[in-house]
Length: 277
Image (cartoon, rainbow, N blue to C red; front, side, top):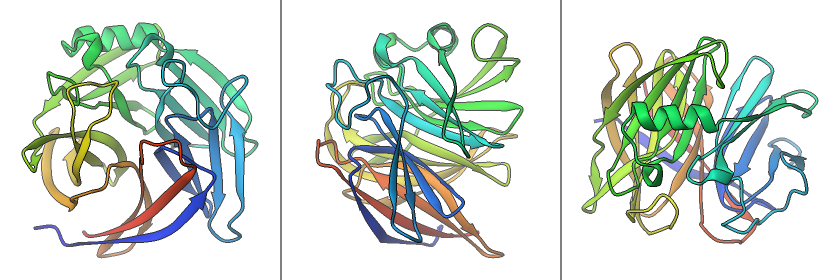
């Protein structure tokens, strides 16, 4: 069994519905699925900045209109932020320079998402991207299986771009139940050629509507075999949706996690999860 400790590290006032984060240069970069901003929180001076991802951004965008940014990843000097694809208004990827925070490109991923649905045999109502990884060669996009078909799938995407020159592989996973509710992917990060992922059990059969939370777990996938090395429940109550590597030592890994409170309250709790290697 994987030993772990979980502790509340700090709280940020001004961010709601945190759905993903990246830790870089002493700052936590956070997205919220109700928000049109990328938030930058400096852990040393506690300063919070906002960077617009869309035109006319807001903290709490109406559910029917929101871009639903659910996944963020980092490679080189860029951030890549993905809409979930769960409605037609949620198909955007935003690429941002990590130094200047300027938008480099805004890309419509409708074609990619349609091909992924076809390739993974996912109905549109079961499609919900909540995790993203880029290692400079491959993209790994995780579909959260919180629809009626429980389609927890890791898509591996290779090619020149994500619009019209790409190849797709898919691997489907059956994740454990928590309190009788099937868990589903909510975020992931690549560490030493392993995908560490979060999964939450939420009592709903909809990618659109929220449900009662039964807890969250962490797990690891070997990207060579695409098999799960382990899973371990880390909470009975939290809906963890953001995961980033914080520190790595000879014998331990430390991650930062954020939880989605599924409300309009502008408050984000950031946790530290420590695992034995």
